[in-house]
Image 1: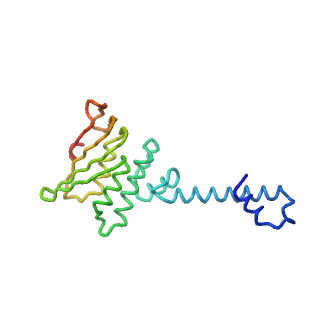
Image 2 (image 1 turned 30 degrees about the vertical axis):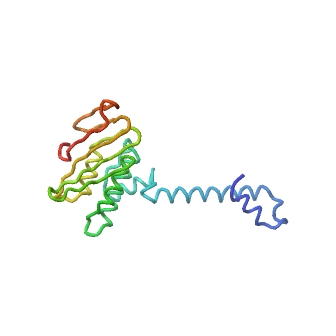
Image 3 (image 1 turned 90 degrees about the vertical axis):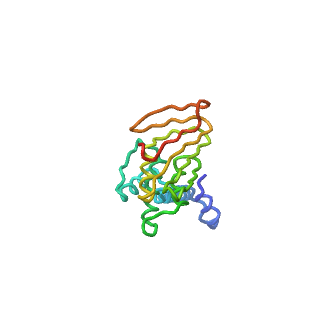
Length: 186
């Protein structure tokens, strides 16, 4: 039974409850409207957008829309642009950067080394990574200050499936569960 049909039946006086067809039609129509509203709300929010909404956000920020790329990576790029767009002087904080990078894994840590103008990005996964490092590195480069370099470290409890234009490698646990690359290598 539809949610709105139940609401309508509960709220109507008994004299109007005799026409089940009208109540079913009205309830079904209102359920469809609610589903459309829920879908619209999901697509408008870049954190939950998956289809047309995500494409719209990518077009707004002039990002390439690649349907073969994971939704998580596409969202991370959009959110990186959104934070840069809304941040004062287009400089983001370490917490904002960490939140963007976390979209590529389960958790992220950033360790700053002020004296040498470098920060370490440690991306962690509780399972195994299936990651295109080029996308991650592009996002980091687009959100970091231009005068600061970075290193990237991937930590996984299991294995890593890493893809890049520069390389492709399977790193299977227990051979190695830590893979580090410098920001400028890719």
